[in-house]
Image (cartoon, rainbow, N blue to C red):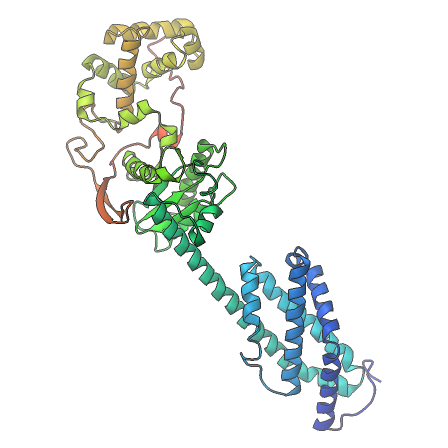
Length: 490
């Protein structure tokens, strides 16, 4: 005796073939039992199987049983498995992909099925040398079958997944084009896609339109699609954001949903822009005002494209929900608006800007405090007398009394016009609508896209060379922190 096997001697190839046939025939009579065991083991070892319902388990059991019968037939006939033998796996693979079942878990199921089958082979081989040797001769063909079948199943799974992804992209693109034309689907796949992104449940549901372009050096062919996918994950309504690559731009239509917070969406889009920047993908992103319903999407799209003009050549996020009408008018102002500002005000603000901006901060704080000087001082964290001293200086230098609304508005307008100037620029020389910047024309980047009606357009968008990122557009700071001055006692 050795190794627990009987001392029976092999009598040649005929005996080996007989033992192998016996093992396979016995297994053929137990296919249903083995399939039950395999599915039970899958549920125990693979969490994704355990989480599925009875219908899924029944389907899995039926597939395992078919594989076992096919495997046994191939082995009994001593031939190589073919595609025709396992053609039934294609539809099962598609069902798994359609159900969102992970490919790794699906292939892991093949491993478990093979493991259960091999354990059954060893069980029926018995303790004789002939049975043991026959079982060993089955190891290689069983491995070849499992590799062949799992590879074929994985290919069918990926094929369907790619098809489904392509169909989803096509439906999304068609839907966006329809929405940009001011229409809404009434039935079919496009309506289903709209519902899936939260865009068709309420005709007046709030939403925004986002458009983004790559700026700077092209980081690679996949960069635009990577950015599009990142934007698609920024939904705040429980739905993915409808986001597509549309020629050289990205267009997204996030649904805010009932009570949706546009500020939260802007925060998420800001984080997306920053995370992509860390990957070498530089985006300039424009966000429209909040609109009520899909009928206003064409207007919102034009807003999102237009607001890109406010951004510098190194990208950023310009969000209209964060910009007040007052700030917007200042951003759109031309040289004439700046020439209308009293030179005394311009001179004070320019000088104050070089010294740290304490007087500008005081004007802002006084306006924010509803002309309450004590509240403004607390906001600036300075003594009441210091705040009073600053107001006197401003009045002496500009001839404006901050307690008079008209005078205060003059100062606030001048400040807003100054805010949009690049650091070091002279007021009246720098504008951001494609005209000269300090006597030179800003560099431009082509924006190739389509109009809301689907017609191609080729335009040039100023990239605003030298301009600092907008505080109001990117929410990077309040601009109210007091800056100490050596000329003013506290």
